[in-house]
Amino acid sequence: MMRREALAAGAVVLRGFAEPFAAELLADLDRLLVQSPWRHMTTPGGYRMSVAMTNCGPWGWVSDPTGYRYDALDPLTGHAWPAMPASFLAVATGAASAAGFEGFVPDACLVNRYEAGAKLSLHQDKDEQDHSAPIVSVSLGMPAVFLFGGRRRAEAVQRVPLAHGDVAVWGGPARLSYHGVLPLKPGQHASTGACRINLTFRRAR
Image 1 (tube, rainbow, N blue to C red):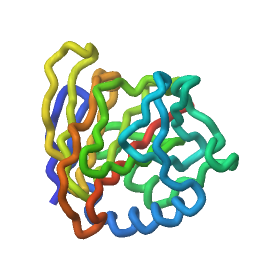
Image 2 (cartoon, one colour; image 1 turned 30 degrees about the vertical axis):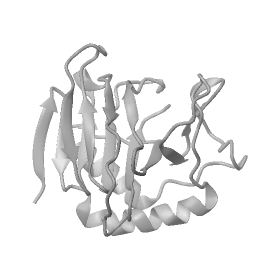
Image 3 (cartoon, rainbow, N blue to C red; image 1 turned 90 degrees about the horizontal axis):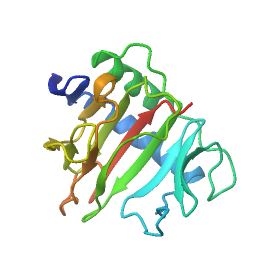
């Protein structure tokens, strides 16, 4: 049974919400990777990101020496990003509704693959044109420690363990909260092997 865990006003973790759909989500991910495979993007400062990424949906988040942005085309293939699978959309909209954000329809899904040692530094999701929609983040595979802070980088940060099937949702007053992921510890998961998969749904435009 799903358990709802509050992080802050406008932010919750829905424990186990996506677990019943995990096999379908991962199968659909394998299919979209044929069109837009994993890649390690480069930050504007020239650093190679430790997390491998791809996207699906009308818009994809990209990073390169020119900056961070959303683009309708995959710069690796020159083609449109794969369509967002129905399973992805159902979990995203369902989790948003369960967290109190009715009517959320994402137009972008950033997919991250964490292997041992991969991490995500504290940051805000602010490249979207409209911040009224929430962020929906689905964890699959290896467990990780999610960092969740406030609207200023200097505010205290919670360390939130995330397991296979957990979904974090933040919006409203928490929409621009700083967040990140600690370096992934080595291990194995029956569904994903030695990695963690994260599906992050946004409304980009």
